[in-house]
Length: 470
Image (cartoon, rainbow, N blue to C red; front, side, top):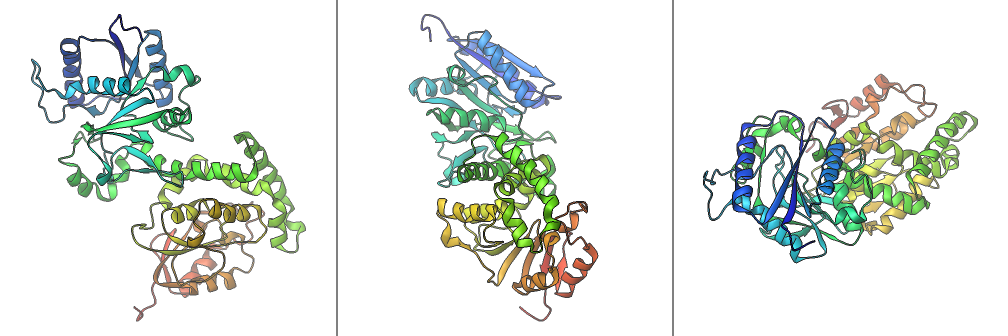
């Protein structure tokens, strides 16, 4: 940086729809404050409208580079800096808008620190802090309230609604800096790339911004608990797109990395090519007398197909929903039957649940799962045969593959404790053309389950209730 000139900052705002009055007023006050109270900076503005988020962010980076900026402040169009309304028109000696100066000071004080954010909260659901930490198993998880230190702290991912980037980042990260969000959200992408190059990401959690709800209310530390209670069942409709993706992508990215490590794959294309081989192999199922032999003979393409499948848009959404069905704050014991590589069930194990995984020994995906349990050091939470009684049972992509489904399903339902839950996607599966789907008699299966005192909450969640039993 040339110390003979002012520090140059680009404020980049991806802007997609009408901006709320709260944001408009706040950003006008911010502009006034920066122009009058922070003369040590030359500030440029880059607003990109009507673009996908990754395209908007790439365009903003390009603009900052063209202007020769030293730092880039990414600020979303639903953030409110002075949510308490403390800033007067003529400026105060202690102003919330001085957060820009604070973020610059953090970056200048630590050469390893390349991204630093501010604290804000999600605007729906549990109003969680938009900050991710990395656990020892490699997964990314929201930090809890008790982990907010009210100072500069190192994090894995700072929320993209407000963070400042040292422009030096774009000298060692290749363009395009942000990609389409089918694997990572844009903030996860850039933070991960920075960390992969040996640098750090921080968040000054003493700097707290408001987050405008879609119903035009600003989420702040003073009202977030009420909003959590008010949101209720409708909260998911208000959640910004990236929020569910953080849950799913954390587990799925770890799943993909482990699969590539186990199989020796180096590129996504290798997996996609093998997934095509799987599609061709399944036409041979009629040549096998024993289904177990068919599934063992699939080989690595079985795992490849499962990984590629779980990264498709609809399965990602489904994964997020299923990953939140079990209360992991309490001890639980589950069964994942016909589990394959078990991305959902294994994620519950990583969060402390006991799980029995049952499938065909010798199948590539199942052997990967056994290997993964050792790699992640969770063998003590994993079983490999039917036991019970279970608090919940997962039958994902399972019932349709069973030839003797009555005997198998009857055994499993008998191992489900009274009050336990059966979770399945069977009744939404209409793919009758798949040769592996040898049992598609939905009505017969539904009647059989009810006869075993397991009753539907909906087509995906069933609860066992044996009347007269505790």
